[in-house]
Image (cartoon, rainbow, N blue to C red):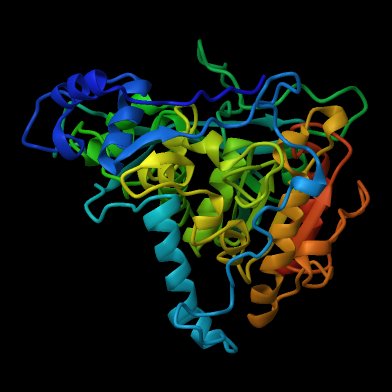
Amino acid sequence: MQRIQFLISFPVLFAALNAAAFPQGGGRNGPQSEPVEWTTEQDHQNMMRQLGIRKLRPGPSGNENAPNAANYDEALANPFPNLPEVLTLNNGQKVTTAAVWWEKRRPEIVEDFEREVLGRIPSNVPKVTWEVVNKTEAKVGDYPVIGKQLSGRVDNSSFPAINVDIEMILVTPAEAKGPVPVMMMFGFGTLPGAPTPPGKKKFNFGPPPAGSDPPATEQLLAAGWGYAYLNPYNVQADNGAGLTKGIIGLVNKGQPRKPDDWGSLRAWAWGASRGLDYLETDKAVDAGRVGIEGVSRFGKAALVTMAFDRRFAVVLVGSSGEGGAKLHRRNFGEAVENLTGSGEYHWMAGNFLKYGAAEADFGSMNAGDIPVDAHQLIALCAPRPTFISYGIPEKGDANWLDQKGSFMAAVAAGPVFRLLGAGDLGAGDDYKNVQLPPVNAGLLEGQLAWRQHDGGHTDGPNWKHFIPWANRFLDSNPAGR
């Protein structure tokens, strides 16, 4: 069921009461012993007030019978057909060498994403100390493994009222002769041989049907890989009320965000990077061949992780949609206005709300005003292997996700992969006129890959294609080690 975002306005009287209730400028005005306890709506309204926004446009609804039903007409899907140039500097100079990309253009794109879209990671984020709290020897399917339950304690001496402890499970083949590549996955995993703790559940999207492929974990082990589960909710809550807690709240000493502070997507990516810090110290892991994976909102987080942390070697981006691989400028399914509403704004920087503004001190803005788009987020992953995965609407990977808009973004990112000596999708550069490849016909020849499988809201059917593809580009044959 999709959220329906409602138009938000501020009558004069309510604005006056609001101003009295909320600290000016976001609330970091002196020491407090406890984090601010706000509802999501209060936090969302506070960010609107900081930005001078009086009304937001409502996001489209996934209910086809709603008055504001999402658009699924391709004739209306591209109101802003021209994407920001990925290989042109802000001064208009064309980028023709890898050196100019790394030294000038890439930093420009990173700056725009940090300031306007995803937020900045503060310079004073505290350190994480990892500890192995449990270790098991068991089997996953038919494969003997060594499992480690890890706890990453974040130093909270600057604000003891907030504790952040990151949960990660690491599983490696017991019979490996040396370090193995590892796929880190966003979600909760069970330590092999140990019971699932009460109240915990795995982040999957339905059990595999009978006769389907083995779980990704078994496929990875069969290929000689290890895997890790990192629990993103330990790092940062998936709601606006949690923004004064978690790692974002800890750094802000329990106070609300400023407009360019990081949102949950960037916080989850930060958590994955801290998990990689640990993996670099574990002798069972080939730290130069660690990948990142996620589905849905965690597909967004996986793409963000890969884009900003160049230590990750490969990524599988599952059904990520708006805020992930989908173009913001597309009017098809979920839209920017859904991400600026109170249900999803916490994923993004506060500044992102500007692009849903109908009335504000600065006028109004829309998706066409965003200085960057998803093709540039994908391009930040280049030249490392980047696999974009989707399913089909008939099985539950809804049109809401805009599979075609994500394919257009991947096509538009191709020139950067080629500039850096990597292979693109092989679909040309005319992103405006591309057609989706047939379902189950993957474009897997280059380091930038696409495959739409015939399953639902999962990347499960693509693992058997992803693993040999990743092995080829990571120059590994781990099963033979």
